[in-house]
Image (cartoon, rainbow, N blue to C red):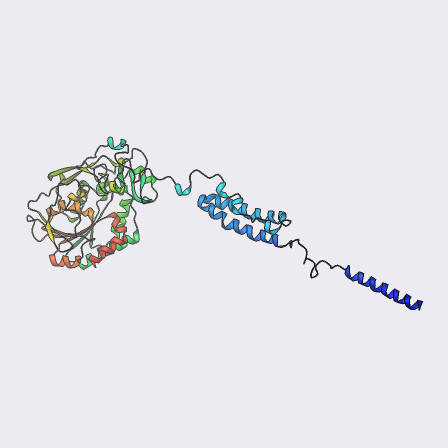
Length: 469
């Protein structure tokens, strides 16, 4: 009995010891349930967030701001500061903190290129020429204008070689319109239009002249007069040397005329004008030439044609004062271009010359070969689609057609003394065909008289093509 009780008691003790062993057991780290009740967060997510988020914000936002403020510093500093600081510091210092309390690195807390000292002159604020369209004649000092002396407006003895011209200030400045630089610039108290020559366009222009010469072969002599602009004749030599992209206009005109066929009579007037470049050949406040400039071109045409020209001093002169032209307007009324200019014009020597203007709508009205107005409009009534001049003192078998833009207007008071009829066509407004017109009126001569800029303008060449072909 005692033995049985002893055995039972021993078994009971063993059962109790087994139960105690089961209730005090623990899990190895890494088994399921090891971190179920552990309030400590996982250590891996925080460094991951620090690496993936901070660099993304630093690269996408901070450099974007830096580019608008200072392009130079944004390129050199932003990439080196931002990407290196966020990934290296965040993993080392943040894992012990709770994820909910960890602020994300922001680009605003990281030194940005925008706080770096910047140059005083930003590329977008490059100093602009002093001559801006905001200048007013009443508010601008006019030292050059007050001392201005008009060059001779009548022909002077021809120089043996091309005279040198030098500016007073040695400086030039381009004008701006709507924030964009235009090809108009000033030197002292005169405005000039920078000239360019595009050879591919020049060949297209020559092809039109050649086409007309071939189409009218045996009936009408075709002449080509490329009119120089002020940049190539009277712009001071020291300024031309300083302006990037400057051309030698005399050489360019020679090249242009070389593109034309042998049955085209080439009229070169630029050397005549260069030998008189210290005279009043172009206006200071307008892009056109003066009557004197046109006279030298007229003289060159007569030489090419083989007829005598009529001297300027044999013509009656009129003078109109107070002219401010197209360059004055484009400059925004820059006071440095003052004082106002004189306009000189010369009547034909023939009596009874008439002028009839044909408008685009078919209406007609009379005009004057020379008008008493202080404007470039004084020559041949300005720009009109078709103007017909009749000179009863010249035999009826002399008929001229001239294809021109505004530069050609100043030639008409000289040319009317040599033809019975002149048909002046402004290709920008006339809608007919010049080959048909030449055949209908029995034209003996046809002149292409356009300024140098036209031979490099595809737009203008296309307009001329519409009336030639």
